[in-house]
Image (cartoon, rainbow, N blue to C red; front, side, top):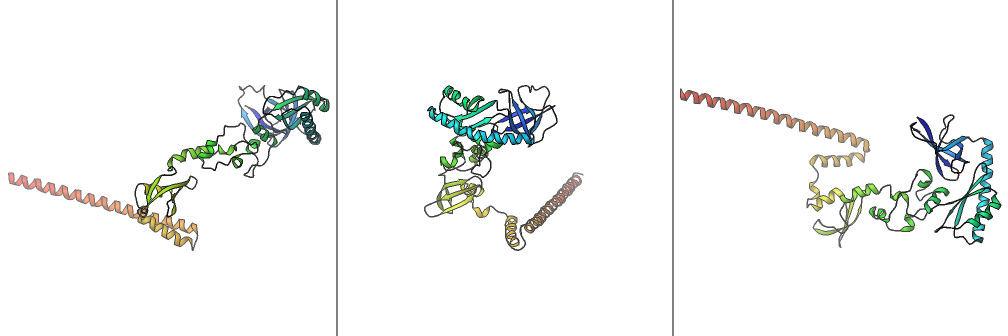
Length: 346
């Protein structure tokens, strides 16, 4: 077994790396050598896991070592330089009339590489751009075109939920998100509200889609007609989370639980659905909860359920002994009948 580390680089990219020395911990600041660039970038260990020795890890990035205080100060100066370079890059792209949006520049720890991140709707001929920018940065330039969702992942931010963007925290890949997922979850099709910082549909539509897809067939379709308390009503809306169905007619509207709706649909009266013991429990719960709280109600419910169980067991025992007595009586009567017949035959 060998240990492999998930590393979040300072430029927002994620990579998997190995380390031959002592074991690292989550949160450690490290220098990582990226194989395709053969250069080092700063990053943070986010997680670690074990892999079998048979797995080839030679293509993985490698951790060079932990960053010292001097390294962290140097990285702070590099980040200031990166922010200045973004402005220079944008001016050069604008002067050349390139239809590209440069949003980030990342320098390696050795300053031997400069990676430029940009978005564009089509392919961009950036050869002249690289020649002019190389005179400014004096490093090897690596142009990196990304999509809108990758841009949001690299830049980061806070979502409408108030938490860090999913793509910038735990998502390692992007799934397809369609407008049908929003319809399936009965959300108002308001594209601005359903869009994230990337301008695409929010990724969290995918998280609950499976649960909604499984629950949706249990609910009636909008417009389904039922007769409720003598009135013909239609299903106006449903709420899968609260498991309720809203009915509406010209005279009134009412909200029923899904179980109540199914009983109404079958023509059963709602007041017939509860047994005596259920009614007793409900009445007792309301009376006690207003005085003692919910915990006492639960204890009392347990006592009543136990009493009901004892009554059922008692009835079952009585029926058993009664059946045993009847069976014994039948056997005696049958035996007496055979004895009388034998006497008559003699």
